[in-house]
Amino acid sequence: MAQKLDDTKLLFRAVIMGPPGSGKGTISERIARGFGLQHLSSGDFLRENIASNTEAGVLAKTYIEKGLLVPDHVMTRLLLPRLEEMTCHSWLLDGFPRTLAQAEALNSSCELDLVISLNIPLETLKERLSHRWIHQASGRVYNMCFNPPRVQGVDDITGEPLIQQDDDKPEALVARLRHYKDVAKPVIDVYKAKGILHTFSDTDTDRIWPYISSLLSAKIPTDIADAQRASTH
Ligand SMILES: Nc1ncnc2c1ncn2[C@H]1C[C@H](O)[C@@H](COP(=O)(O)OP(=O)(O)OP(=O)(O)O)O1
Ligand SMILES: Nc1nc2c(ncn2[C@@H]2O[C@H](COP(=O)(O)OP(=O)(O)O)[C@@H](O)[C@H]2O)c(=O)[nH]1
Image (cartoon, rainbow, N blue to C red; front, side, top):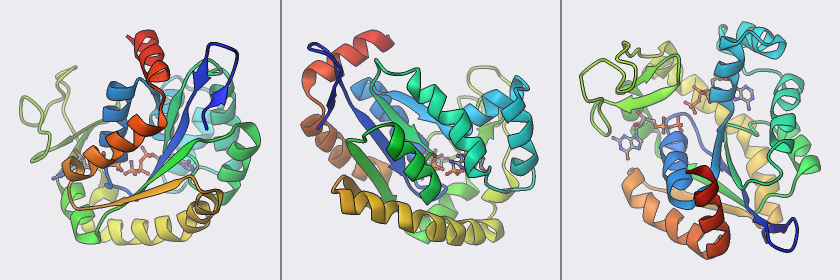
């Protein structure tokens, strides 16, 4: 159940998991908009730290440039203080935890209410990522079929060019997915054992979304959603 902070404030904490291309970012945005949860993306947070040259950002960059995961102790040192600042907010974490060590660290700092796991067929992931274009500085994501930019090849907000990441190419994707499965399995098992895991399988985000939306409507008391929406607008 949602954690009670004081007599008036209830908080809701959720995690979204899934392989690259499964729609975590897309669904997180809809949840943030629809339910007022603060969307915290580990990838966006790393990019912000890299852009502002923080000590952790400089260190993280050396791993990301090689296509590696950032070590657990660097991730937890970055993310957990950020979560501790959010004591009055309901949030949705996207991209963290990725490993069992990260899940254990998160577990010792807060209690989660819900974990959403996206289980999307490999062929769908390959197809989506081959059409994924991003605005590198902000991490804004487009898909040339599903949510194309207003002007082909440029970011809607800044007008800067979009790029396609090397590791979104099909050859790199198979290895990434294998790695995701190996690392995520024990994390998923932990949340399953806690009884907070909800798995969604389909080829289309628009078909999954109504189920996620009704789950959240049932789990998030209306007063939390209203209060969070009011504080984020
Ligand atoms: N929890 C984490 N642990 C370790 N490294 C991380 C974590 N989150 C992000 N990173 C690193 C490795 C990623 O390649 C990089 C960018 O993350 P992210 O934006 O989530 O993109 P991604 O390409 O790995 O995944 P996705 O396609 O699922 O969004 O940052
Ligand atoms: N064709 C199609 N593309 C989708 C769908 N859902 C998300 N996408 C796109 O697929 C890509 C991966 O989605 P994203 O939310 O970035 O997934 P993440 O890597 O898990 O965060 C992006 O380009 C999205 O715009 C869908 O249902 N159909």
